[in-house]
Length: 553
Image (cartoon, rainbow, N blue to C red; front, side, top):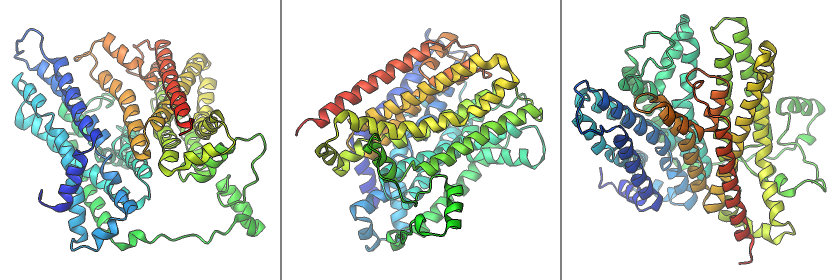
């Protein structure tokens, strides 16, 4: 297998990159630090095995987070990068079969992920040496579930890579797919567990598409979020079977597309909406709200032309899709409030508010890097920055236009759930102060995400690298504290959890709304100061980099 030419090329090519070496070293340091945090200070082993279980949980959740964060990065750009360089057609015309090409791509991408898993073996051996953690009952099942998840998400990222036409789009859709399969699939089970009927059964099976329930059961946390109900003992086996089925489906679809038809792109005839009948124009106006094929008006004198250029030229984040996302978000928030007001589910206002905060936070974290990470890096990569410099536009006007093209869609997402909050205040007027503080937290989350992504875009010259870095940084800031919170009181104390959650503005919103599990932690106003300071630092970096880029070469 390792003598396969594509495997050697993919695997060795990945290892030669500086960021790959940095990822391996950083992962090894983080995992070693997690083990050291739970290592007994008196050099004595507890016969009960409780300290070892704590260290094992730190290691297991740390590996899972690293896997979900790093696995899609390299395979998502594997095939689309070959297509952009013109080497994919050479591969398809070679003696290698499509199956051999796919196996080489899959094995080459998996080699890097498996290398990351190997960096955790010393930490796993330390857990076993402490006692209380068995090799066959704990460590091997954990590594088997993680390896299967790596294969599944690698196969999914390769499938995404066959559909898109740019590396940054591949990263956006790959990370969106990981969010959908690993996190969103857990939501219906939280809603319908214990209600009975086909909805509860379907939600139970749907959550097994994610490796998180299997890992939580191995860690002994299967009761978290179960609302006092008994956990299903078949979760691990279902996760394995569904993971194998999803991997087979992704592989089959990728093999079906891995041929010369990848280069066939149907081009529209370009019929403008203004040239159609009045009935068609009325229907499209109702369906699209902002019709993408409608003839645009000229740019007004007081409108920033860079903002208009961003709205009209980018493929992702077009306004008609943003309006649809906002409409779905509004319906979801109103639906949650309506169901809770009927009393069909035993949810308090804290739970409903927490769900709406998570909905808005997930949309912000998913859309902000996708819209912002390519604002400057894509111009540098394509040579458009030099064209902007030759225009009479000043550097502040260029930067403000690019920022405005991101601020308006994100602001639309923030406003979309306001009707749900209004209904909550109408039902419970005393929650007005909490809702106001939650909106401040979410606004700071949006500002922090935008400035961080824009800083990555100004520092890195490639859009794919800037997008992956922005997603990774946001996942570390917003996901890392939740790992500490999940292990509260074992081994992290109240002060440590409070300090960790302070850097996460979404956790501050959950604490303000008094979501179960977050209410005991006072995060306001320290979290606001932390997010504001970080945003100011990132904005200063952007201004310095923009000044450097706009100087005469």
